[in-house]
Image (cartoon, rainbow, N blue to C red; front, side, top):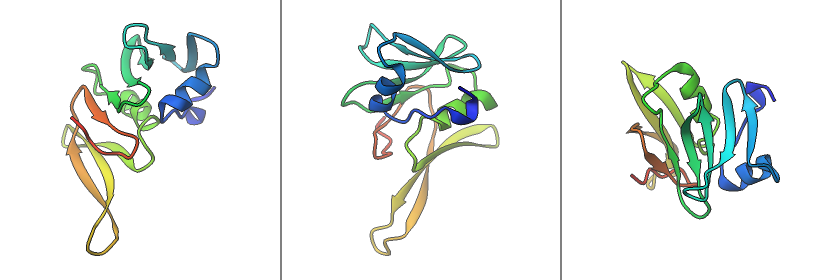
Length: 127
C-alpha cells in the first residue's frame, strides 16, 4: 500500500484494514496495530503511536514530539474529513469545519494542536 492510498479515519475502518491480523504495514515506517493495553487500534510511525482509535470513544492524536511533515501527513490521513492539520509560524493547528448557525455556511474554526488531543467522529475537539 502506498502513502497516497492509506486512509483510516475511524475505529471501524481500522478494524476493516487489520482484518484478523494484529499488525499491518500501511506505508513506509507506518503500521496499524492492536493496542492490547487500551483495547484499541493504533497507528504507529517509527514505533511511536500517533493515533489511537477506540470503539465508541474519540480518536486520540499525537506527534509524540516529532512535529515533522511526515507526521502531519499521516495524521491528516486519519482525521475526520472535515478536519485538517496544518502549520502556522512553527505552531500546529487543526481546522474543524463547523456550520455557522445564523447563515448555515461552512466555516473553518482553528484549534491549537497538542499531543493527546481528542477528536470525535464529528470533528469536535474534546480535550
